[in-house]
Amino acid sequence: MSKRTQLLLKENNRLEEELSADSREILSDIVVYIRSANISPYYQEIVRRDIWQMILDGEARGVSASEIIGEDYKAFCDQVIDALPKPDKKEKLLTNLRDALLSLIVLLVIRFCFQIIHFLLFSEEWPYFQVTAGDVVSAVLILLAAFSVFTAISRNAFNNSSAFNKGLFAMIFVAMILCTCANLFLTAPLFQIHALAVAAGILIFSAAYKLLDDRLD
Image (cartoon, rainbow, N blue to C red):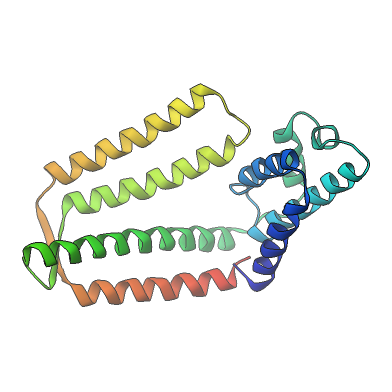
């Protein structure tokens, strides 16, 4: 994220401590909800600051957060979000690319570390990594599951029902089963890649992520 967004994020994190415990919990749910909203991170932090100010002013008058915002937090957030400018198609595309790069980097680092441990224990095929069809399929499934879980949690930030929690658990469980099956049954090797090439790829993707993240709000 841009420097102005980073500064606003840090300031909001600090200011949030000035609220009561109940108000912080409500604001935390609101922040979780707006994280998947179709507005830039900068405007997310603007909304967070504005709501923080409303709640803080209310506490000074002895008024609770629910009395200021209303009982329907979701409707209140949707109304605020609708009034803010939306990112254009280019910005949305670059944002999705940045988030996908971050997820890919995490997957590559995890795989790289596991492969190094495997080499140290068994000393097989060093310094080449073998990539199977199952590896590719499970990686795609993990990325899709991660985005789906994040979106589900964010959009249901005010939903504490057991049905939602069970549905979320089922989603994660099914994703884990599918990834396990892919790795067990899709063992056909696709290609081999040198460990240094994997490390270089992680560095290149990290640089691309940092470049995008610094340019996007």
